[in-house]
Length: 416
Ligand SMILES: Cc1cc2nc3c(=O)[nH]c(=O)nc-3n(C[C@H](O)[C@H](O)[C@H](O)COP(=O)(O)OP(=O)(O)OC[C@H]3O[C@@H](n4cnc5c(N)ncnc54)[C@H](O)[C@@H]3O)c2cc1C
Image (cartoon, rainbow, N blue to C red; front, top):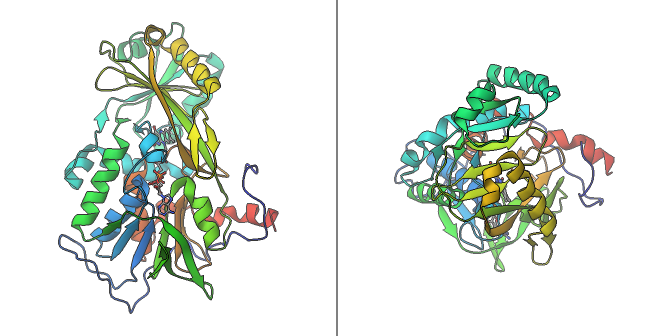
């Protein structure tokens, strides 16, 4: 587990005692207007979600759909610069993920094609596949092994040879030895998807406030609610889903979460003639290259931008821009004929081991987290919302095993 970057201090990262079973406490009725709630009305505490990016909005939708009373707070009122959802490349990728995310990624992959219909609003999803190219023969055996495991986990992925790759993506660099291909992957529009979740959540009775949460209120080891613009708002449950801002928000509840704020940047070219091109990534290289509907190339893959503080923001660096662009032009030489028209960055929370922290904390009771997406939370967003809503409703959710806050135990002890 990586240890750098998280502030040191005496405040511990509390661990949940159980993986599930932290469901809604009985005895307090939900107050939501469940006009279209299809499920049973739960006897639940009122829930405040801190953050209305794609993750907070997905949780709001899935919870409200179950009949819970949900209120979302976000100062931006939706995805805006420099949030991760605003900046995101929108890659819908199910391959080359940490095994702990496999169950969620399979579930999400199954939902993307019909998500817009379900939410009654566009998500911009386009199924164009993702091709992860391999340049060195020595890299092939581990990729083949990964693909075997992913297939066994239900991910729709297979190996392709050079001839098939040339068919799938004409114009790639010569001499590639193979690749792994996920035909069901593609891209979507992150701000539109967040708005679609939020709109559907509203139709199920959730309310959204365009205000920042100042602090999470804790008394006697339990969450009491939040303070927004100096006003106390009682809540039985608070879900922290404020992306990179979660680090500060958690400290308002006396916690140091094992996450840090990072920034990632993107490049967009001017439009060019449409080509046959799935999203292209490369084994052993930091690259993601996709073609947008207008023929522009969107280039990224995880190149760092610089993080600014007070207020939290970011700026693009020349070093990352040049490195990313050189790599894109090497793997896909036609990119070199384009001009970079725009670049931007967004802030994201990264966990110590690169996968999200999802679920309840032991203390304070009533505080749940959905943080640490580490640059790849967008594809998972439909499944994250479903899984956390079910867990909040008291169901056992095996897909969250391995992603619970409990795995931070080693880090916590290391800092005591
Ligand atoms: C450049 C870039 C490219 C990416 N590309 C991909 C990709 O191709 N595929 C993929 O799967 N993932 C990708 N990701 C990751 C993905 O976009 C994120 O994991 C996901 O958007 C995280 O959503 P979020 O809702 O947790 O965070 P955010 O979108 O950052 O939302 C956090 C929200 O909290 C709000 N907030 C801040 N302070 C407060 C407060 N005090 N009170 C209340 N609310 C507050 C903010 O206004 C913001 O709206 C990328 C990320 C970046 C930065």
